Image (cartoon, rainbow, N blue to C red; front, side):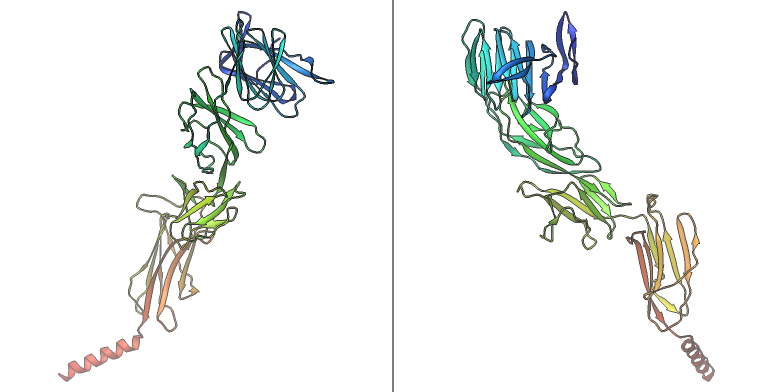
Length: 439
């Protein structure tokens, strides 16, 4: 009975266990993982052997029989188990910890450990293979050693990204070329527990769009070169990537390129922003990125987000929202008590756009600073009212304001009103009549 893979696939062809086109990954007790390369021919014994790998102690050791292709073994620290890979040239390689790659090609076998030494048995001769060295075994020739491909070094890559609206497509990471590299493999892991999320191949020394979209969280990227045989080189230092979520208020709108439209009274809130700082471009004052932040002075506001690392900051823009609501107060020269003030509100713009369904408008009419009641003639897209002359001593300012339920201004207009008493106009008329009669 064959062990079933946890990822990828494998099938039995002519009595041989062959991995599918995406390879096959297996999980063994003790957190051990064994991965077969695409089309690799190998089988895994489910029952371990108890081998005396250390003095006075026997270790459960799982056997992998490799005929062709590559097998990668990952044994976490503290695991009680080991893995023995048997292949061509009568070779048996025993791994006890860390990442190990073993390749079978023709009558040769190659073994490499990234960080920890390996036990090697060939024709009943025992030896130790140091980490970072590729050893080639052949049937009719002594083993030969050569260094593994060196680890790439990161050159560029923004470490803070915004998940707008739900995820971020991270890209544009680059590293130094490695002599002898045929391709490069990028490892994507969770930063908190090291869980592998995927491996992605690139033919050049930078990441294009090969990584999947990432939701808010902390991640690690590492890259290693692969030689023409398919053997991996040493892995780079991890690069930490922090993906920040953005909580936006009701009625705000998302635009391309990290641009958010919102009213002057609204704020946004960043999630997973521990260790980061916010800074409005014109203020030059940093604040914790966990604090709410909004538009400055009603103007488009660039916000830079950065951590302690001096790398390229993440930039987003907060923009004053464009509302479809318009208000009009007229005429622009009003004299009381002779004229009334005309008040109009239009709830759509020239393109027929309406307010978002979750916006609740609040309409206010003020004379000076005092609110007054008016009777609105309400149509679906248009409101109209007349404000009769008000008592008191002018001049006045009549304001029409429309806010949302959170106090954000949607539309506003005003007019200045003069006072000209009626009796002065009557006296002027009488004087004109007397002058006419006198003539």
